[in-house]
Length: 220
Image 1 (cartoon, rainbow, N blue to C red):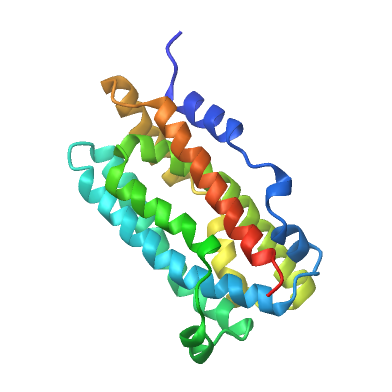
Image 2 (cartoon, rainbow, N blue to C red; image 1 turned 30 degrees about the vertical axis):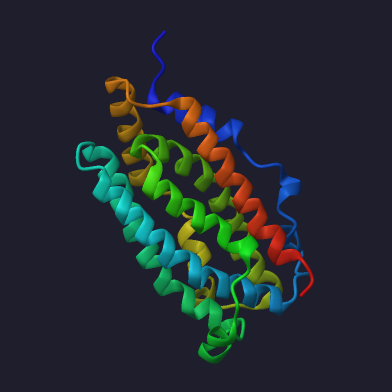
């Protein structure tokens, strides 16, 4: 039986789903037990992550000239990062992470390992392999954002504008899902997808994301 891209994306996402215990911060936010300094650090780290990921996705799109479906996927991701960056500032302001605090902030290695690895993928990964890995990782990220958006309103009194960054990533993205499916299917049809390698990339992405949250949860 021929394996379809949709089957592969679903099984890979399921197999690489993170252990709930790997993220100590989001449950604290969900209960309203995370302090505002942790929220501010989240905003300040994302100020570094979002533009870095956007540039990495643009580079992957450039490298995908021979694979138009992959190029469309990474272009859409880069456009999404640009939109998210615009939503980040109201969240940062609500946390008290103003420009002066941002200028004085030293990013944490445990948080910046994730975008560093995305940049590595941009330089080294076959585009279709990266599509599969990134899509599997984004499923967990979207769930975290949905939980955070609800908790910020319920426990912290944040406005819709201040929650928009997390609302954006929590929303279903059917067009992006279709683009990812088309990219993976084209690679399967061409015999150019290395599933083992893509899963390795996905496992590392999930590990670096877990490191991001665990680092933020550590006492300052």
